[in-house]
Image 1 (tube, rainbow, N blue to C red):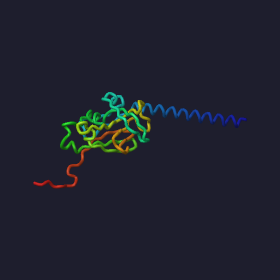
Image 2: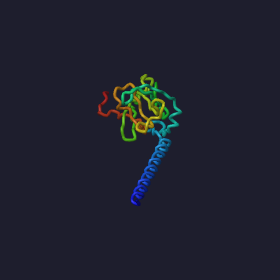
Image 3: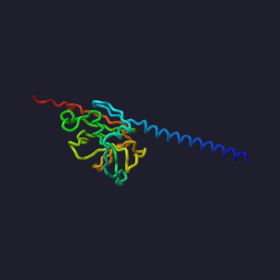
Image 4: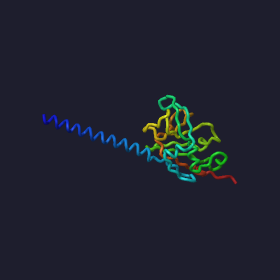
Length: 184
């Protein structure tokens, strides 16, 4: 009888410890979302660390697109080009010459990366929107995808739909990488 009580006591202790750990993880997830900062860096005029609140103050857009499972969803967020303009990246008539050799590297928390030419993000060059979404079907993105995910609605494959985005970095392609000599 005392053995059964001891086993019950141990099981209750294990349950309490597991519950405390689970609640601690939930609290950490909430605080990590509120502590989240999107790092905008590289060849920009101003390096930025944007919170989700900062991003919510930028012009909002929505797009309809099929998710990874093929279901139609409505994504909401900020155009990638809009975020880069906040960092001083030039678009429109100012995107020319050396600027055309610049590109955006999007980085995820797990190291996944994707590249976009700046012209893909500039409304002066294309009518296609590429979104940094924080909501899907009027709900915040799930932790497995968010808090931020790149949405490229016009592409057939989702290879550049980067989940859990943490950084946007502007790079410039090297000048004359093949060592081609200019004619005189």
